Image (cartoon, rainbow, N blue to C red; front, top):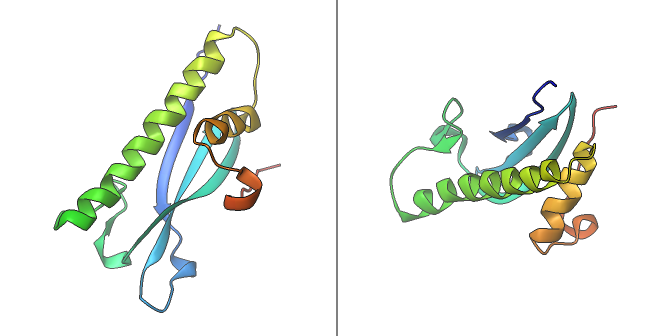
Length: 118
């Protein structure tokens, strides 16, 4: 049986830079060739973003807080993925996504704009 994994990527959406000069940090989860994206709710200056590390450059309490968010999101996504795997039945990226946002206590329709690769 082939091992199924989930991939989690954090990146800046540079085309959405605002008047303050900061961009939103987005998260993309990929599973079995399909993906979903959502906003993390954090914003950072493009000059401070270290794309290879998927982190903000060190320097200050605010940057430390921003760097914690991807770790927390990633950890929670992996936890929900593991729960679905333990059920021993097939599931989709949509189920991972829905399970994560139910646990996070958010209404996905109100707070998240998601894209799915068809």
